[in-house]
Length: 196
Image (cartoon, rainbow, N blue to C red; front, side, top):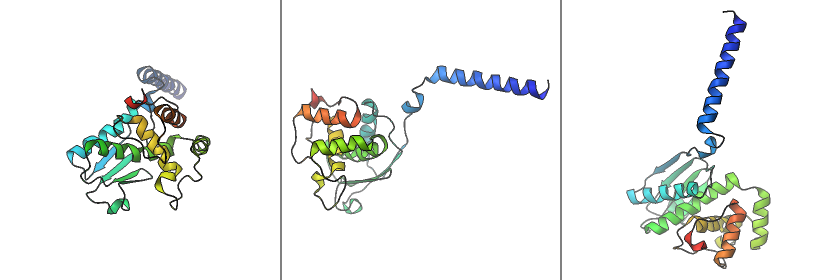
């Protein structure tokens, strides 16, 4: 077999392999592949709460979560005195002895920051801020509830949660308004029973 025939045979073999992979995985395969999640310093209960929150995004069809490195702490120091921080794929959760519903809620909230940064365009964020009458996305001189980033994370947390805990917003709107805000940010209907 000469070089030209071998090259043609290799190309045909490659095309056959690619076609078989496309048939086996379909066009949605890359977005359905679970993203890595690392949890450090968690008790078993905290680990279950974080894992539940992570999988809730998939259940809601909110794909493309960036890889997350989650660190759990017994005090609020690593979270600047708060309950959580998210920064470029690293999440600090300082939930101490919070009950499981609150551990899930805090994990959903911090993951929402990561999901929004990866998946929501500036035009959608601007429309969300206008609708919520928010003047700044993340100016820390503003109270926590008045920052666009926190309101957006609270809306997504509500849409993915189990309806046990109301979102922390300056004014908590009715379920229909919360659902429309969730749909604005995600392009999907919320999965919380509270939306029904």
